[in-house]
Amino acid sequence: QVQLVESGGGLVQPGGSLRLSCAASGFSFDYYTIAWFRQAPGKEREGVSCLTNNSGGVPYYADSVKGRFTISRDNAKNTVYLQMNSLKPEDTAVYYCARARPGRSCNRPSGMDYWGKGTLVTVSS
Image 1 (cartoon, rainbow, N blue to C red):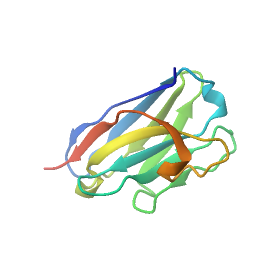
Image 2: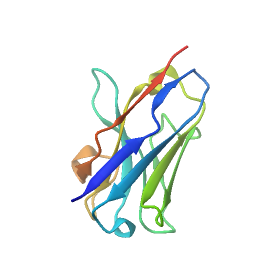
Image 3: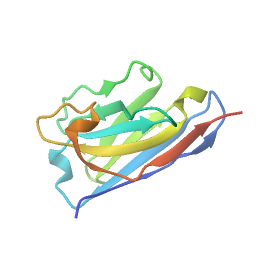
């Protein structure tokens, strides 16, 4: 069955870095867009970044993370990464990876069909 497993979260000081990983299995990874979302306490889930399966695809980044986060994928390892630099306290959230339905926008939760269980990122001094 389709599985998405996030890892790499943790506690980091403001200005620090983390790299999240999303390991996928149970489907043809090469053919799907994978997205990262996050949800802070009391807030709605928001799209953070996504990258299509096409090698020439332009990644999407939320305005709040542009210039600080970088998404990448390794199709040989069925894994998508989210490198997060210059972290801020407002980046604190549970981060989820999700598989996008073909043809659907990858920055909206409604466009996803499978989700991981999430990994907690806490940015605090």
